[in-house]
Image (cartoon, rainbow, N blue to C red; front, side):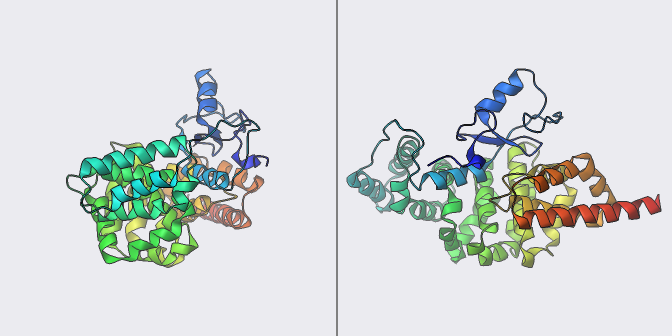
Length: 355
């Protein structure tokens, strides 16, 4: 089976291994684009736009989609390297190490390290089909935070590597009061790494029809929004701030949550919110809803503020929207892009009348 064009790096033409996105919205495999930039090139290889920002943002959504595609059993190499097989006894032992009431913290940590290793060395489909995603979620939300930071960070790392967007139904377990309380506590008191990882899970929840009810509940829980807002304003870690912005944007984009003033005010007060949302406008739009949510959030911000409109235009939103319209993006994403362009044009004409 051939590799879908969307899953090929434009530089190497090979399957993405570590997809990252430039400020132009184009995604490349990290080794290829890093070599390009290291060679003194300050343009985007595809669009040839000059790069005023050379930061590389991990494209987790595309990585998850590729993982999902690989799970279908695609054979990309006529002479593939043999993957390490996991026998049923080993899987049972790993499960028992988690589920045993006598399992010690060191034993659970060692089990998580083993799973992390297997995710790299082995065919992860056997872990998925054996219910490890659900098991890891239960471990995550049943473990007290204090004294277990390393265990929780490892559990989240394994969960994200198992592509949560494929198993988003399992996240509905958070409707259970005790699990939801644990989520809120981790968002409030967890390490920056824990909070950032949880933001990726919240984004998956907010972008799936299967978890709409849970997303609505998240939007109605002030402690969740307050924790995300606090992370959004954290100036010590830009990746954490962006993850929080993506989570807030996705949650607020659910139709029933669009009136959330907390999220709206948080985005409007963050100096980097508009530029980060502009970067999110054109990212694998044909297969995921991140672009739609970014456009919706920008429309909310720009409809009320001339300053935000000017900032969005200066950050390159017009180019991003036009690139999206010329791409293989979904009809829904293109409709939103056209609506935003019309809004910007109408607002621009109105702004000029007042100058």
